[in-house]
Image (cartoon, rainbow, N blue to C red):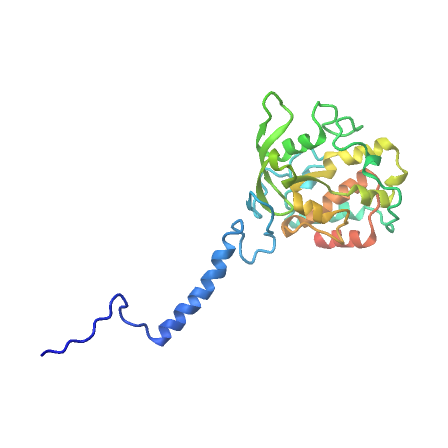
Amino acid sequence: MTLRAPIRRGLGSRPSPGRRLLGAAALALAVPLAVSGCEGNLSIGDPSAAPGGSGGSSSAADDGDAASPLDNPDGTKPGLAAITSRGDRAEARKIIEKVGTKGRGPKTGYERDEFGYAWMDSAPDVPFARNGCDTRNDLLKRDGEKVRYRSGSDCVIISLTLHDPYSGKTIHWKKSHATAVQIDHVIPLSYSWQMGSSRWSKGKRESLANDPLNLIPVDGPLNGAKSDSGPASWLPPNKRIRCSYSVRFAQVALKYDLPVTAPDKKIMLDLCGG
């Protein structure tokens, strides 16, 4: 009788120990890369790419139609583009240098209502006022792309695409999830109260609260995390626009004759190469 070698079904030849080790190492590398790829296609190792809310994808290197704050002194142009050239950063430092400093005062007596009701259309001496749309919709229209309005309205926005400068994400926003995009006061109202606006007229406070120079639509959770912080305590995760953010903070401070704290001013200068 002829003896036959046993048949190994479906196994094929066994890999050598060396090949097994290489395969395991490749799998170990592939797993975290695959997981990272699910989170908004963020660039690995890019410090300016920050995770955020639903409906967003990374676009940290894309300013879209955003304007540099150096070219947007009244805040009527969209967004907040990065300041990158040596000459522009020098110009940025000149603006920041003009801002005065003082210690932060108490928050005693602060209430949001001291700055008028939210998103009023009648704030004095600011762009977009008295145009029939509230401030929030004005800002969404200014910065949004692919804007859609509620049926029968040329004011109430129900969806848009936003290039959020703070996170570097592109956010596809719908009014049904309104808080996914919030309007940030670059100089927070509470911060301004502690730096002197507590002594202003009601009209001037209403202007600060509704001035497009001081307002940027951004990722909602990031706006909540900022609270009433100055630049020494909180900065946008997107590092590309931190100098621009500092310039905008300074522009608002200069327009309203508000000082900032010394640590805030130092950080602002440092971020623009000072």
